[in-house]
Every structure is written in C-alpha cells, then in structure tokens.
Image (tube, rainbow, N blue to C red; front, side, top):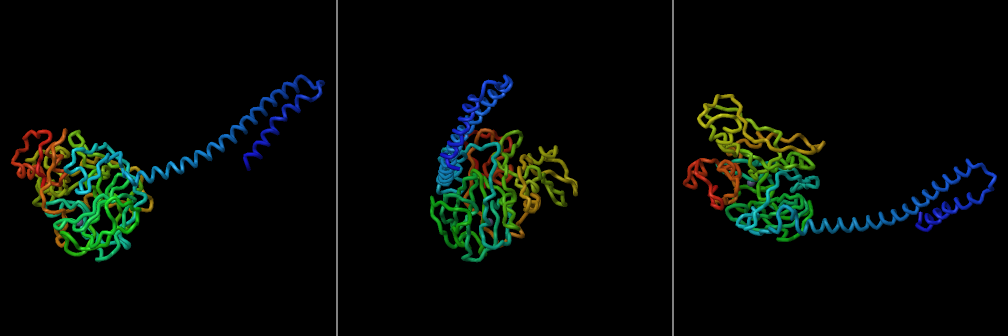
Length: 405
Ligand SMILES: [Zn+2]
C-alpha cells in the first residue's frame, strides 16, 4: 500500500464522524452518546492510522539507517578489531601484543566470545599430531594439525592481519590475525604467506600454504588461539574431530587464584580436572603436567607440600572458574581437559615447534604471585625461583622483571 492510499483511507475515516453528526435530531439521546463515543473512537483510529503511516516511514528510514550503521560497524570492527579489549595496541612484532608495550591490557573478569562464524583452517579434517599443553618441560601453546606442504590454510574468523613474520627457531613463516570477537589466531610453519600486515580477511579466506618452516620436523600447521596475548587451548574453542566450533558463544573467565585475578582465561570451569596419583608421582610433577604450581595444588586440595600422596588418590588440578553459556547441539561433547593436558612428550617427539629458545620475561603487576606467574607461563614456582635466584617468600616488587623460561 502506498503512502498516498493509506492517507486517503485515513481521510475517509476522518469524514465519518462528520456524516454521523448530520443525522436527524429525533435519535435517542442514547444514540447520540453512542455516536459521540463512535466519533471519539473513530478519531482515535484515524489518529492511530496517521501515526502508523508516520511510523512506517520512520521505520523504513530507521531500517535504512540501521543497515548502513551496521555495515559501518562491521567495517570498523574489521579496521579496528576488538578495540574495546586491545585499545590502540597494534604491535606488529610480537605474538603477545603487549610484550614490550607501555600500554598494558585491561584484563576483564570475563568475556563472551562469539565463535559461530568459525571456519576450519584446513580443507579436510586434519589429524591432530600434538595437543595443547606442557611438552618436554615447556608449554606447547597451540595445537598441531597434519598438513601437506602447499595445502591451503584459511582464516578461522574475519579479522585483520597483525603479524606476518619469520622465526627461524620458532614459528617459521607465520601469521597472526586479530578478530573482532576478541581472539587472535596464529598460523605457524607455513611454506608461504598469502596476506600482508593490515590486510582485512574474511573467515575461510586463503591466508597461507602449509609447510615445515621454523622449528618443525614434518609439515604441519601450528594453530594457536589467544585472548589478550594469553594462549587458550584451541580445543576448548574448536572441535578438531569435526572441524566446528565446540560452542557458538564462549564465556571465558579470568581464573582467580587466592581470590585474585590471574589473567589466565579458561572456559573449562565446570569441568574440574582431577589427576589420579600413580606410583612415582610428586606434587611438583603433577603441577608441571597440569601447568600449575605446588602451592596452588595444595590450596585446591587442602594439603601441604609435604603431604604424602597415596597411589590412586585424586588430586584436583584446576581452579574451575568459568562456565559455558551455550552448547552447540550438533557438536560432540568436548574432550575432557584432563585428556588435553596429558603429558605429550612421547606423542610429540617429532613435532617440535615451540616458539624459539629466547627467554620469556614477565613484568610484575599489582596482585601477581609466584604461583599465578608460574601457571601463566606453564612453569613451576621452584623453576621461577631457580631462574631468578629468589626464594618462594621473596616479595615481588611492582615493575620488576622475572624470567619465566
Ligand atoms: Zn605446535
């Protein structure tokens, strides 16, 4: 219906009360009252109709404005991905974007990350050759997927290329993409990079070719998911058996250790991780396996560092500080964290690709504890003490730099 025809209908309604008013006077007073009531009603209707026409026009204009506004927002969110989290940070050198930067991230208590637009970065479902977790006394911060040299590697989400670099003793030819959902993804050991820094990419766009460059034996893709520079187990986000996101939306929560934010994010809060004590296990060994500290294990289990472990006893190994908002119906239940965190040295012996041998440093921030730092860097308190010539009781000065690897 055109605006004109709606208007003429409205005019017709407006004329009705006039005609009614001209009816003979012999009508009963009751009728007059009814007529007046009708008149009021009809005026009301016509007013409503007129308003509706106005509304429709407004809505049409609003929709247009909204569409162009949304397009603008989408464009901006790709130009400045997750600016609310990363601020003006656009470090094109380091995988951890805050490394060496004066501006530090503001770690939120939690963050909902929309993963629904995820695209599996390889065209066929690849075999996982090495999982995320501690590996030969160091942290493997990604997941390794078997690819052939020259296989197309695709962007997992829409985003903007932050790093295109080469690291001979680490990632080889690699790319880092920042996404509007707050995540960053890293693609390592490529034989060729197909995109450049500041390029805007869409989920599924080819960004590189699989390879065997850097610290790698056997061509594979090293794939990482990070949030504010902190590695998150990609298996929490991606169901690698089916190539789909595990959940449409994740709520990552900042793990609290001793009531303080650790700036370690996890989505696996409701899945408490337990370790069944085997012969020869020590708290130090268990802490290393699960990327935590002896003091944290003691806190979680109400035990002391000197407590003798019984074989078969269950030790709780994580803080369990988060939950998942929405579960994807089609996805299989995610693998338990316990399985993901198994020691991988034997499995991974041939797939060594950790990020180089350069020492990693941590600048002490307010609220830091040795336990939290150890967990963040996948090491132990005793190792930190050894590396920095300090004791467990040393007071950490703000701004002091601790060597963590
Ligand atoms: Zn790897």
